[in-house]
Image 1 (cartoon, helix red, strand yellow):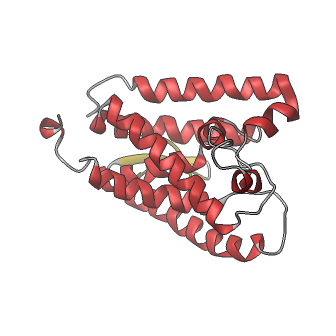
Image 2 (image 1 turned 180 degrees about the vertical axis):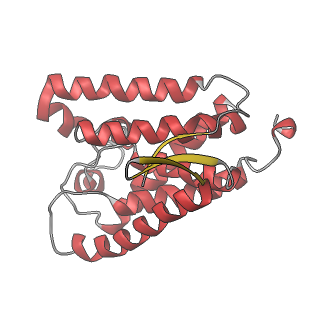
Amino acid sequence: MFPIGDDNSARRATPVVTVALIAINLVVFFLELQRGDGFITEWAFIPARFTDNPSGDAVTLLSAMFMHGGWMHLGGNMLYLWIFGDNVEDRFGPVRYLLFYLVAGLAATFAQYAVNPGSSIPNVGASGAIAGVLGAYLLMFPKARVDVLLGRQVVAMPAFIVLGLWVVLQLVSGVGSIADTAQTEQGGVAYMAHVGGFVAGLALAVVLGGLRRPDRIA
């Protein structure tokens, strides 16, 4: 079940921040391709390095949010950001949405960091911040129609079903990843970042007033 679009009929403004975030992610990914492993190591978030020197490595908390491990990683994240981010931005407004996105990404990073602060594996990706977007979308637009590719058919389903299944998958995988990271230093999907970002998105949607009606948003 793969989301490919949603209902944007109620969107009031051009999603300038969402477009800008996608553009930045693309530019950074091409820099990764051009400059190689040295660039990735320098700007990725590495838990063990951060543990040793938090102030000196603090910039990687942000830079790692715009890096990706490959074309599929980049493509999947940008598709989800494009489908769900524009509606969340429309509800928040561009400034509040940018703040929301960055804070959700930071929360996701620290959720993964808490699982294994001594890991030497570079952490990269916008997945945690985008998980926050999904959490906010679920609260703000639970009945919105999301078009999903189901086999060879496109089916319109309520957002709470599509994102609810995503949540279940992340929680199940995240529980397993806690045990795995205690025993191995192999790379993989940072499920706890997804869980942390999603929970942060739910909380921030409430704190930042995302549940108010659009005509009451300042």
